[in-house]
Length: 445
Image (cartoon, rainbow, N blue to C red; front, side):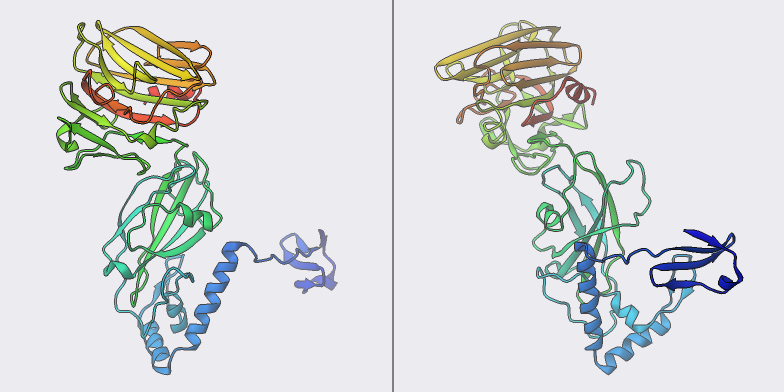
C-alpha cells in the first residue's frame, strides 16, 4: 500500500486492474486489489438458491397480484436499522414471504399480501446435548399445526453472558413441525453444524403459516451440555409414573406396591429443585436396562453420581437406596446399616468374582448427601460428599457389574427387597471415567 499526494491522483478514486485507489484525509491511498470473495459456503449457496427461486416466483405473479403488493407497500412503511421510517417496493414486501427452499414441505401458494402475521413461538424448553439429542420443544399458537413451517438459524460460540442479537447466523433446513419435533440433531448435522460441549449458542426461530407473514423471530440461548448417558433429575411431579431422562431417551418408572404410581404423590423438596420420595415399604424407581446395563458391562469405564436423603438411621436391617446388587451374580449397591452408609461392588470376569464392601465413617442422618463411583480399567473410586473417598484396584474389577434381569432401582434392592425410606435426586450415569475435579463439581451443585 502507498500514499500519493500528486495532483495527477487528486480526483482519482476507484479500481484499476489489480489496484484499488481511494482518497483519505492523509492523501490518496493506492493498494493491491483484494480478490473477489467466493460465495460458495453451504449457507451462501442455499441462500442464493432461495433468492433466485423467489425472484422467479415474483416474475410469475399476475398483474393483479403485483398491483396488490404495490398497494400494500404504499401504505405500510417499515423501520430501518437506524429507526427511520421508509417505504419499500411491492417486490421487497413479497420477498419478506420467502422461506428457505426445502423438500420437507409443499411450497406455499401466495395469492395476495397476507392480512395477518403468524403467531410466534411462545414457549420453548429442553436442552442441547453433545452428540445429541438437540432437544427443542417449540410451541406456537399458529394453527392448523400441520401447515406450520419452522425456519431455524444458529449462531455459534457466543459469549456466556451476552444477550445481544448475533450478526452471523447459520441456516438449518426448514421443516414442518407436525408431528412435533423434539430432536433437531439430524437437521443440524445435515446443515454441517456439530455443536461442542460447553458451547454457548443463540437459536433464532421463525414460524410461517401459509398465506400469513412470517412471525417475528424468537431467539433462545442455550449452552451445549457435556456428554452423558442418562440423567434423572427426579423433578417429575405429574399424574404419570414416568421419571424422565433429561435426554428423553430412557424414562424410568415410579412404582408403589408393585404397580406404577403417579410421580406427583412422591415429589418433595430436593437438593436441586425437587426430588422423589420412597417410603421404605414398597416404593421404588426402576430404570430401564438400556440406561445402565451397556454402561456397566465388562471392560467399560463409567461414572455414577446422585444425591440421597435418608429418613433416619436403622441399625437392624440393610436398606438399599440405589442398588442392582446380586449376591449370586454382580452389581452395585449403596445402603445403610448399623447407622452407617455402605457402598458395595461385585464384579465377575470369566470364572473369577471380586467384591468390596466399604463402610463410610459418616453416620447416617437426615441431610442430603452426595454419592459417586467411577471406574477406569480395574480401578474403582467411591465418593461420599466431597470429603471422603475410597479406592480399590484389583484384578477382574473391569468385569461387568450389571446383568439383564436384575433391575437397578432407587429405594430398594433390585426393586424387590431391602426397601429404603428417603428421597433420590439428580441421578447421573456417564459412559466414561470422570476426574476428581469433575466429580467435585457435581458434588458442589
